[in-house]
Length: 182
Image (tube, rainbow, N blue to C red; front, side, top):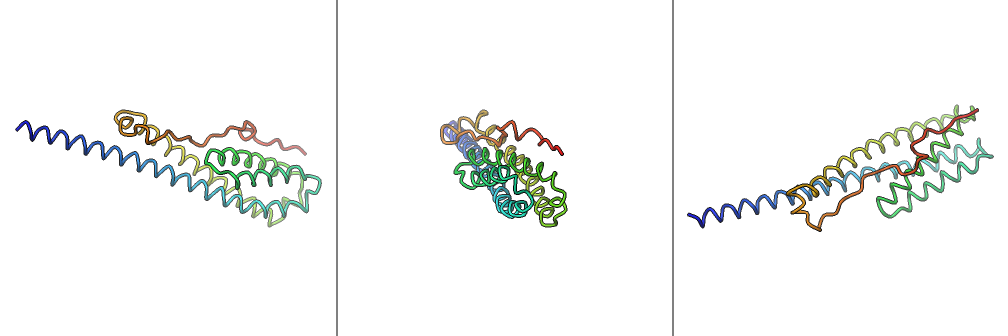
């Protein structure tokens, strides 16, 4: 009888271990999926930017610095190799786009241009999707980190599962609204 009780306890422990491990793996995979959603939206934004820059170039010949900043920031996002580097580069691109739209306010003909208006609307829509995807990613990361840091998940996670970094805004310029002056 004691033998069967011992077998039942061991089986219950093995089942609990497997269940906790599988839960952590599913949360880890959900984080990867949420990051891929962000990455897809960042790529969409990167694809829209060359058209926006070309549309704006004709109107803003003496605003070359702003256009160069947007182009350089876009290249940094495209060239980032890690999620952390992509997060940082994305913040810089958001800041550069904010400056571009602030400068565009001084050009009434540009603001009336239908191509510019459509691109601006597409970029705004994409920025909203990126914002939502970042929130979703951060929720996934929080859930995953809680799973590997709390008992008994921390025993199962051991050293195999590492803490993930959520999407944060590092650049103070990204947190501030652009200053529009005429």
